[in-house]
Image (cartoon, rainbow over all chains, first blue to last red; front, side, top):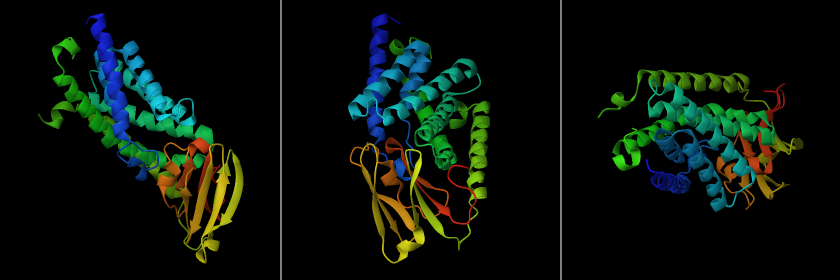
Length: 173
Length: 135
């Protein structure tokens, strides 16, 4: 892929991630289990991992988290650190899973790994802040909820990649 | 195209593993919070790593107890009513207001947290030897 084209696609993925992040807040999943969300922005991370590999996909995640918190006005607050920790850990695990287990797991499995990692990281970060072990009460519920949401996210990423034109995928997928 | 064409064998193993993991973790709270229906419940309020308030929930049956807790980013209004507890109003500066959306809690186990304010509220029965810090 040409360098310019790659930059354009990365920027598009970042802005898509920001929009998905916004759309996500319309679904009040946090009323079901406190702290739960759909993780739609993970679609973008998965696509970026499959298309570009580590450095570019890492850029997509970092810029999505930072720009998202700037838009929401939570930059450098506790909410920023929470979404940062969840975003980075789930990205790293998804990348490792993609890199080493690509032949065994489909995008759905990788997405579920990301969703579970995201929840575990956020609960742990929240525990470090409020230092009350009781918060882990919600972890099993969050993990159970991560299954359907991770499944859906993986499925969406799979079909998105399948229907992307050759000019974007460069025949990588 | 069927979903089984996309899912691999190892995907299914992963899904089963995650379900089992979640169920195993789910057993722990049920084991610890085997409910004793006649036990007295206490509301504990923790702010910044310090237990700042203990309220006997039984006092709330006659009339609701409403009090304020002031944290780093603002003031929470907490309501104890008919043996249940909720955050009536989260600070305006709390972007997600998760503590408010958690709603009522009425037994041991669930916890109301406001992470930006480092505030947590939970119920504890008086005869229990475990507390929020030890489980």
